[in-house]
Length: 219
Image (cartoon, rainbow, N blue to C red; front, top):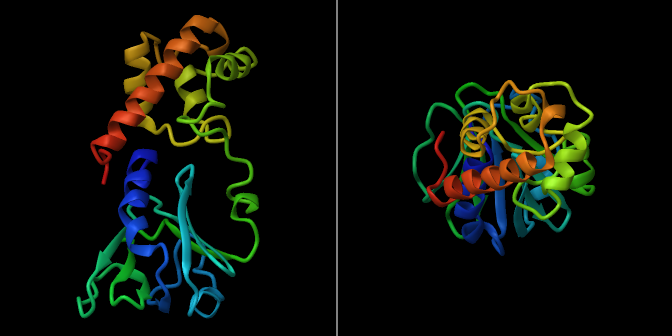
């Protein structure tokens, strides 16, 4: 399953090819994903220009003048840039055709992902608005984690994998960070001292940063 490092790697890879490019067409070959592909997507985006490619948690946000495409890769989704004339593959479900001749294709064998359109602020979309802090940003620090942990009896691994507390810390990254910090995964969150929380925050940051540099581990 693509986690934060894989999604960030995807974002960084497609951004130079999309920003400033005109969308010549949007082709939807399979509308039935985890939620149906937005019916307005093709008409709303055609002729628009991609202004930015950002990430919030595991959601990719492709902003155009009239709104934003929200993409979640689900269990098996991926985005691939292909040259003009490259044949479709079996699980290519959505294609963004650029005026440059390249296309961005969304492929998803298990169809658990999302390709949505919103004309509003994507950060206020119901799927995104309640997400927790970004683990690589300043808001995720020892004070933040400790203050939340003190109120919870759940296992610390379960806590740091809760996307409403901190986004993008998937199973393999949580396990590695806990190991580096010397914290047992089953330890009750409220039993962690601030010092242990500080070590854990540092470990989470390091593990995710290293994974991003390596291009992720689950794609």
